[in-house]
Length: 343
Image 1 (spheres, rainbow, N blue to C red):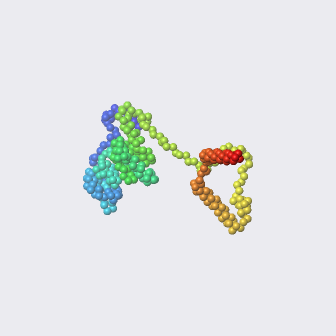
Image 2: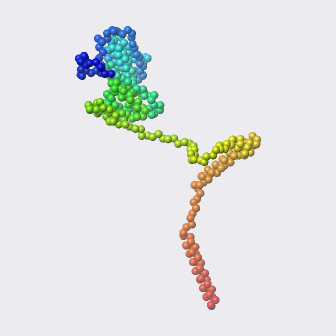
Image 3: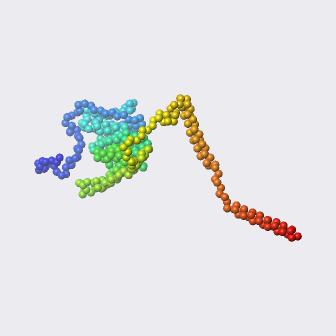
């Protein structure tokens, strides 16, 4: 709610004052003095991080000593612990120290994890494994966050001004609160099958719109792209399609279907003995088997049946030729007989 007081009574409230700026917490600001009780946090780390943490622990100790936070590394139990001391003056320092050891356990490099102790830098660890059930689908969608040769991840880091690390079942992010909010949205949408490239396009447009002072107080909805889902869900076809054609109305109900016993009485099977019934059932099965075997045999022999040959066009000519030859021979014989008669 805006202030209703007269500005003339506030000479310090000028236009150049940044009201959202958070000043650093100094030892003089802690009026109450030392803390009444000790606060501590412990985080477990995986076995493969043991060697790296052992090497980087002096750097972490020096960074936490500036804020008067004590830290211990237990390699036997695989545990990192941070706790306040009598000299600790900043109540938020122990929470930042807790975030440091959380990030270290998630494979964030020590020089990067130590930056969380600075003002204006926050951390967020996003759990992504429980968002997707199928393991193969989870691996594919996690790879989308990285992109080819890490290009998608690099683009997200540049647009959100955050450090992002994808490790195992979590995504660790460090940066401003506004940037972390965008990172979480992109990662969660990616795991629900929305590609990060759509969010990258949106962030690039927003980045350009921020440069224009005329559009500072306007709604940017008209400039942002709206991507609709194009894949339509396939309608399942029913197994048995009922006849929905209009039928003539009859006030009488449909006839009752005959039961199994009624059908047996009609066929006479009901009055047969147990053995006769079993024999009849066996004969029925054998008959069906024979019919099926005959059908299969006919199907197999179908390929070996020779095709019917069409009568060729050359045969009638040969027959005609033979007839001509026969008539010629008959004429010769006739001529010979006539010649002998004359003699």
